[in-house]
Length: 247
Image 1 (cartoon, rainbow, N blue to C red):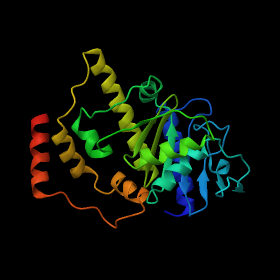
Image 2: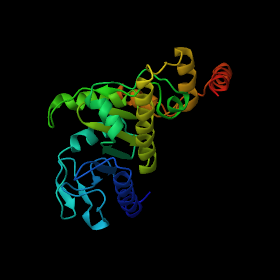
Image 3: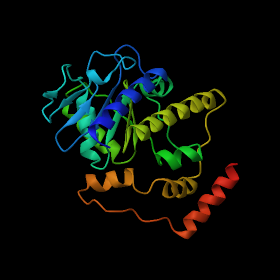
């Protein structure tokens, strides 16, 4: 996707997160990686419902504005940590979807997995990472470690951060974690969600996403693999049996 397409996508998904009710006021931010040093960004002090092409900015690796007339947002640190952890991703979205953010500010995780489909799409874990103030160097470490395990992070006392190859992928991951949080909230009112068996979770994770967070772990270890192994025939059988039981 070239820069012009990325700009249109950034505006489109800024409006989508606003219409979804995941941001208010000037909340939330989106970035796209243009190259090793430049990021395309939404600006600070701008409602995501009103973002237009003329508002977008490009910053260098020191957060200096190279193109555009607006100022960069203060939480670029979160995005840069995600890109360092995951060289294969192209986009990052930060927002405050109410139900998932409610779990995060209460310090309640959505783990362990209790539904099959989110495991296939998001993996075995949705880490809840500790809160640190902006510019605290420890924040980089927890974000990088979290994205070594998953494609979605719940940020304690803050919100949700998702990554993807495209804005569509990052958006759909945000959508799914918010949907999952709504289900978890109802389940807690009825006695609590019943976790899936660990063997089922392992099989589903192998089936669903062999090259996403797994690749992030390899990158963090400085041992990036060009491709992830395909699940074995036995794993496929386990997945099919597990999904059949759940239907």
